[in-house]
Image (cartoon, rainbow, N blue to C red; front, side):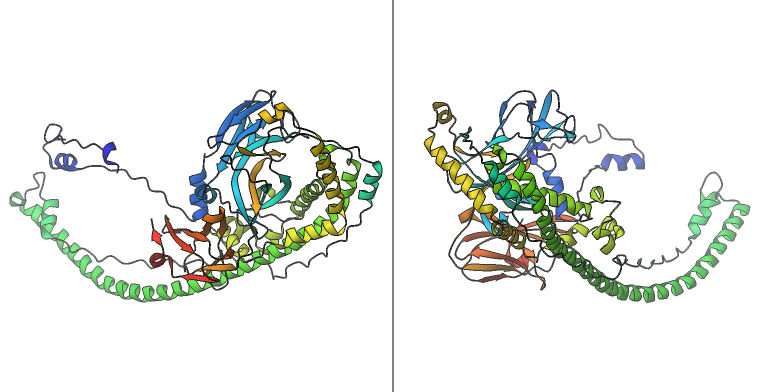
Length: 579
């Protein structure tokens, strides 16, 4: 309790409730109401902490506006930039929802790490921008884009790039390069090219080898029901021995005084007392039997608890194995469907090659369109365990291998997903797609177009108006709503190390790299140890850990300098500072 917000007043006898025993009890009593919050897991705690953290900035949909968020993020919204999912435009006021993440506490709050397909990123800040009107979600209109400036304090790093968030299975994000460097000015000079129609024919003719289709995971039936713990045996209560004084009070007439009982009342009291005494002796003998049975049942219950713990571990391992198999199959299937989508996307983009939005960054225009098509195909094939996204016609891979009952009722299902996803390498998909796009020659065509744009840009001097828009920030043109990141890949030739934390209980751990403004997640390996890989040797690192115990959150941290390949600590209590 906060001392300067707490007051104590003593009323003594001035406001006593009354001279009776009950009144005196009330006068001596203080009622204290305590609201306690308990959490099943860290995700539940994070949801509560991050609730209502969005900044709501009001704008008018029909006019260009400039808004600045609390930590300095500047957003320029062109007129008529937003539409509903059905393509209709909102009228009047629009809510621009902004979330800023510029320090590690924000990263933890929103489950953000600085990784891109297994590679470490140095971040200059992360921002989420979405929009609503009348409680309905909005998206950017066709061809519309926001101009976003992320503050940098005047220290501009020309190697910083724009990254978009790609959701991953553990509820976090993986950052995908958007193919755009940050600039210093709000209004970029736009250099347009005259595209030869033959280029479209060349792009349409590119041959895309089909990535092999993976085999379905082989499991017998759905997951069995979660093991249930048997109820603890009921502990019998010993009978209460009757008291003669109580019997006398019961039959003492209207006065309730034993000394004034009549002979008739005394006889009734004696008869009642004798009957209660017989019942007590009978119940006492029965209690001995019940107590012996309780002790036997209690011993059996303790054995049942051990069996249940083992059965639950076996069941959870089976669930994680099935989820891991789905994730691996999903990754391979995504590559297979991407190769099929890519062939269609090339023909589609070949028709729009003379449009600036296509040729100005052909590589990412094709990659984004193919990825969007792949996502739709994945959902249509049942690759979702989200209730709202399950396709009735095709069913769900999760439903057939896991089962809806487990997904909907197992309280630690999301945590099991995170544990299953942790050991899976995340540098495969991006590298395969990059090789795929390079192998067909698309990257060469895209690079040639961008080089031509750069050459013409150098010949075009900046106007005075453009120079006036120079900011102490990283500026980018953003064509997608959601989380964006100002990053660069961290390329350090120093030796890499692995940090291991021995923690027996479930926890969420991060490695905060102070020297390079990055945050890496820890993943639990098969030995039950938490590991973070690829950290440069010799860098200052703060390891933070958060876990839920008995419904209450616990936080720990420790500063370290990585001096070797493997750094090991004991369990959290002796090895970390707890708060």
